[in-house]
Image 1 (cartoon, helix red, strand yellow):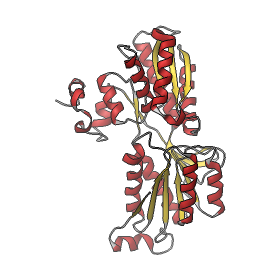
Image 2: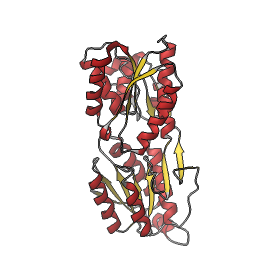
Image 3: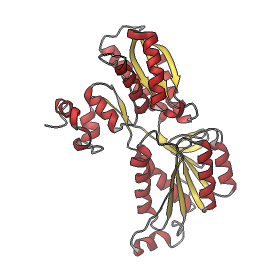
Image 4: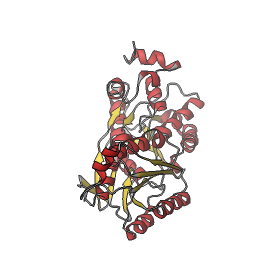
Length: 348
């Protein structure tokens, strides 16, 4: 567990924490994330949340914990931060259904819960902050469909669909978006898989079986995130398939951006997690002030703010990733990817 005391100059702290309507002095806020299968939580989400909390509530204490895909561990962590006096808990649930009891428990004690990234359908949280997950699924699938059409892939050809974790309500929304795009397309879904815990090895193992089953019938793969997409790509490479059919992704991880540059992955979604993390911090501080955050929309009877991300392919990776400063060439264009970066105009 990492417990960070956030401090700024005393004058700034006084300005933020004294007087009516300002953030409570020395309030505790918890930031509970679901797993380490994706590197985003340590690299982007928590740093973004912590940085915004420093600006908004200098004397607040932020507790960060990661449940490592363990439902029981997340419940223990949730109970622990309640015992430590957390006034607001930002929760990205391992299991969206199991999290309903946590929401009810916290609210019975007057503690606000902000659902983060993954919604909690069975018990309305006090607020929900995320990217538009259904929109993400539809965008990555439609991008693949458009690419298949543009490259002359005939109607009736088949794709694989790799969804996220069956216990993650956000994965269900992504799946719904994928279904919407594929159902309206001229292509058929050969087979579909829900990936336990979003684990790339599970996706790779399943994809390997489908490559044996369908072979050259597979003209593309709609994978719900970069980890599952990377697992599918690894399966094609292990099977000696060259070139790898176009594979989607989501999260714009360094590995995925490199796979796009090398031509092995077709797309991903650029969704700088710091944006959502900062929004969650703003909502948390409003709750600490006793305010009611404005609902931009409503999802599962929960006031929500949903951000719209961008699809990234080789055609726009320079503009969306490098020109916007999300990643630098020094981070991505290493070793075997240097020539690809030159070819795409990312480096000279």
